[in-house]
Length: 140
Image (tube, rainbow, N blue to C red):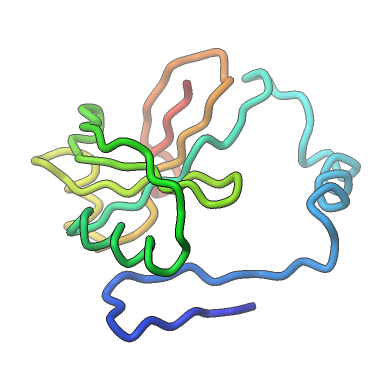
């Protein structure tokens, strides 16, 4: 595992794991263990993981210096009442959100601080937003 350090860091950075197998080999192993396969929901895909942060602009500035990602357009997510922007990292979308008022994002930031709080899944054959397992889930 690798834990990056950043002198100006006020944002928790991820740690990295180097797997001994390729993504294809790990995926095949998960299929054999029946951890991946057909679901009632269709073939859900992880669209993004959402992080609630105090300052969207400063957080994206730090992450951009460290990872040189592709940034999506900023938008207002009315369901969580936050200003958000996607950061794309090699087939992974990280969604950073700053609350604009009361709602799920503000609740998490107040209770837990800056942290992952939302999982967005696509191709679920439904549209549903709910709280479960100490976080929020959005099926699209």
